[in-house]
Image 1 (spheres, rainbow, N blue to C red):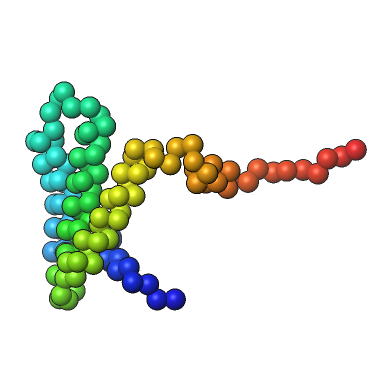
Image 2: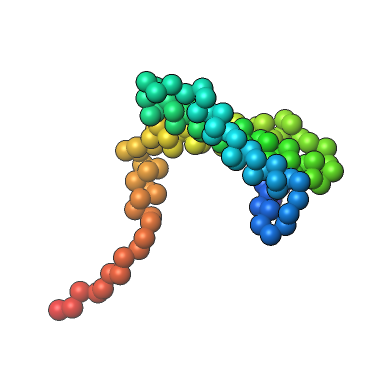
Length: 122
């Protein structure tokens, strides 16, 4: 089944040294430091969490761009941006706990680990 959603291929770079891998590591190290420059000590942990989620979204977008440069393919800005926005929205929903107490959350919790159920003996 074909989908209209375009997901950027994210790099793993495990055991494959490359300029893209080095740039990816640099992005991972620099973005939290940049976020810390903008954060104030009096901000709530909630606000700080949102800023870190935004940094994660920027990281995903930059890594999608790195992959396209590494592969010498044109970068699909609109597709990557759409994917990042959807992923950011899902992360914010999870962070806010907007699903708390809903049927979706209960189904996810109940559908988790199946415990051993033995037939009653009698």
